[in-house]
Image (cartoon, rainbow, N blue to C red; front, top):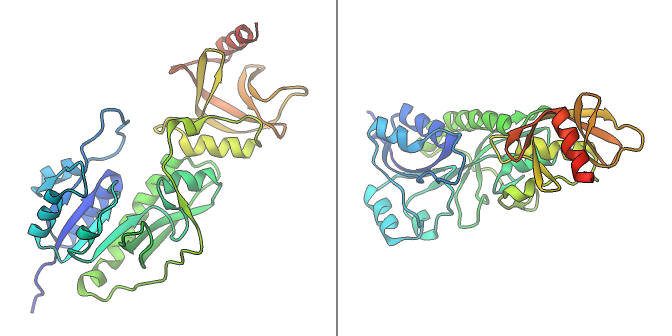
Length: 305
């Protein structure tokens, strides 16, 4: 005898939201309602649209500003879900919403590591060599519930956060795909999420990309990788101009006597770091416009004058 379809309410945004919502649809889950976000005019929207997927698939969706609003709670209750999922939805859900049905969140790290905001960017910034995606039971405390499924991915030495995020998106899809049958029949595991390990991290702002050239080259390079485009980028100010790194690699030793900061060595742009090594900069923006070694040399000389 066929089991009735499970009904779900899905809170979703971004690429992970799109891919995981597609996993639910492929498994014949009855997605009764999707709660998503309106895109912000002030944000670089480089990712896929959950709203567009809902329009294509004919799924009812709403975009409330306040997750604590009575109207949102009423909409979730009216959908009568058996399960709820949060796939990169940006708001914390209040306990009243979590009480409607068992809820599961997809987080972009190998919990309990890198709980909180921007987990991929923080992992790259700290030079990690592995991260992944974790599906866990939702509680009022963020990223604290028991783990249902995890999938690891490597972080290669030159990977940017954007590249790692692509891997984590696939990891999220794989983790959900593997465990979904067990979630639907109630047999999914509930593994410990040891909050004594790892830690919580906050969101990141564009200003957090400011380069401290007195740091070691690996640290500066990790900052670049963590915030490289399409994120706002690692930057440094020289005089009235702001220089933002587009593309870079770890470089070799700095010339004798070179001071930390931007420099032109021969026909190459480099960043001289506090440990006497350099970052080889292959793409640099000056106040948003691409700049070459000759022009940069003139601007740096003018700033010193």
